[in-house]
Image (cartoon, rainbow, N blue to C red; front, side, top):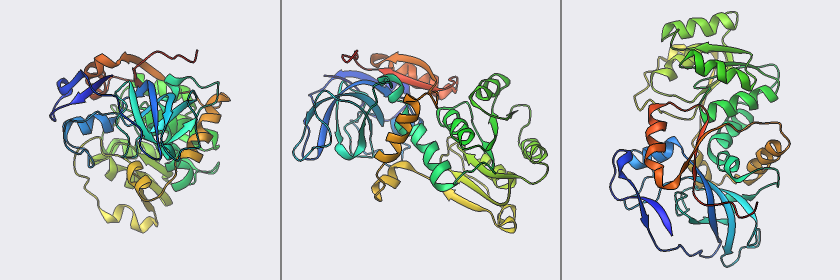
Length: 335
């Protein structure tokens, strides 16, 4: 089969299309013919050797994908060959930048007919992360004001929609006028161009937009210095959810920015959550059902052939994309 492999850590140029042996499903595993694979920050970090669970090359990247079940391993009864599924790595899959992947049965979900495989490939990481952070950790309600940082990203556009569906007032932050205008199309009540309000000006504007109270929830998808600002932007009894450090820089925290407000800091990391027993399937099914019903829109910015994974990573790292980049791995034989 064809796959994109990393033989040594480095920049996008280390993503090399190669021929590799077909994987074989073991007990409890499913062999999936991959049609589409999502491109994520985690993939870029793994490629660069900066991911906390990167392992050692050679590696096939890709933490999420969608396709068709080809074969099931011993003991698997949840799915059968021919079913359309989306799958999440969880640290135990063979990598989705490939025509075939083995996946633990506990890490995949059968799709509703109305959800195509390209959109499905974008759900298991960004959408599940936004869903878990807002629904399970922050417990967002209609009485909350929610600040979403990097609102034009995959996680951000998902978070804006999830918070808006819950009835919350959503303040979407992004790094250009074009991006905030686009994020506003997904249900944000207010948008803020952080390029025009850098650093302290961002904090002041968030406080102004909340009449000085601060936000009930801040979803920090950026990390680094942005996390310190998030602590200043949250209000009394509020919740700051930290789920990334795409800035790849330390966060300087002044405890006086949050403890007098009785605010909570909540951390989230999807793979570690699974390692410690989280079963993603109920939440993934609920997300897929909402997408099928038209409640949520999954914006796919561009679809890139598997052989051009390098170009997909270059675009991701330029932060030029609005919404999700997806690799087209194989034809959808279910159509």
